[in-house]
Length: 133
Image (cartoon, rainbow, N blue to C red; front, top):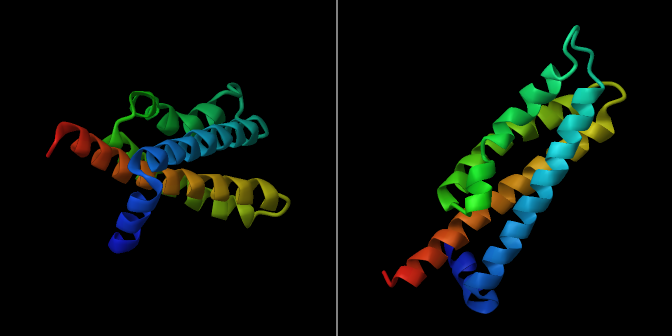
């Protein structure tokens, strides 16, 4: 796997791969947020209808400074958090009538995981190359 990634970096270029990984992170992050808000709106939560939405999106919102600041370590941690959303999506997909929503959530979380892991790797290597070490 390491050799494959190094060959990919040599062929595609580190800057190009970093940009593409960032696009995947941003796209899947936005799709996941929209899906979580949409599914949260459909839930009944007693007096406060915003509670299900906030509980679902708050962990992702906490990573916005890392995404905006393009920090590789924050992206690596976001990758681990995205696995929780993948698990939730798979579980929701097993509920009657929720297969599409759960499947979309699982796919977008998997895209977020993949994008974050690639971005963390490529960006950290890009920063090392820029510093000359």
